[in-house]
Image (cartoon, rainbow, N blue to C red; front, side):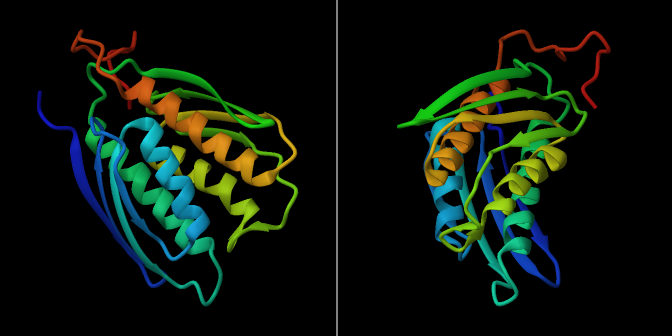
Length: 196
């Protein structure tokens, strides 16, 4: 099997991101975005998706966290799209629940080639660590758009916003792990014949 791995870079006036993704990994990650809570969410995603993920980002954190969160998510989505190619031989769909103590999240993914995201984390705090809560949902939406996948994420219950956010990222990871898995058929899993 050809290794499903890629290195992607994104350089703008706001951020400089370098990212290496291996889909068939062990869940190892080295992540440095300058935002420790975001690093924690991305490490959880890598661990539970079983992706090997290296991310380095230098962003304009003196402004705020938005550009860093967004550009890292876009770069990860672009890397996913690149490594999946025409999406031949993948399972395509994934669905998972992930609990974290009192919190419970659900994620459903379709590697459809049609970007769409419905994300409802229901976070109540303004920020967790140095990350604005609104940007956590934005990260998942940006990932879906750049990866050209359909993503539905709902946090179904939970009192603690850290738990709610982490359960959501873990559910996304588990659903991604299913969707990108090779099914042994080698065809494009679509009646259209393409996933674009």
